[in-house]
Amino acid sequence: MTTKHPKPASRFAICVDTDDPDLLTPRMVYQVLPDESAAESDYLRVIDNEGEDYLYPAKYFVLVNFPQQVKQVLLGTRTPLMRNVASGRGRSSSQAEEKSVEGCPTSQ
Image 1 (cartoon, helix red, strand yellow):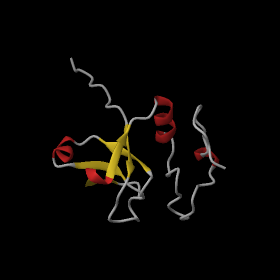
Image 2: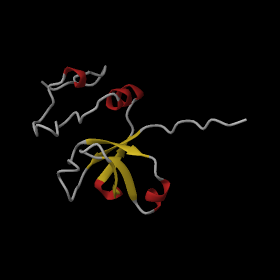
Image 3: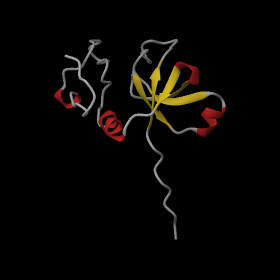
Image 4: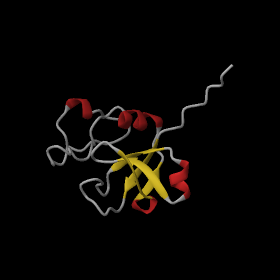
């Protein structure tokens, strides 16, 4: 009989520093993937602006704990909410990304 392991909770971090602004954008939220060996070396495995998971120094980020409803919105979004990487503009115009979260103000 096999034992099912619980899926690890989704973690997120806000970038506070970078050495490559094409891959990481300060003040942007990133999904953090579990990687124990990286954590032991003070690194985080993050899905960057290119959609790839890569190791970055933990000092580039501040871990944040969002309510479950916010996590669901962030995980349901395919491109970054704060910056559309393809166009380089401030906010994507895709209606799929314009989901609002109850209790969180939206900017117009």
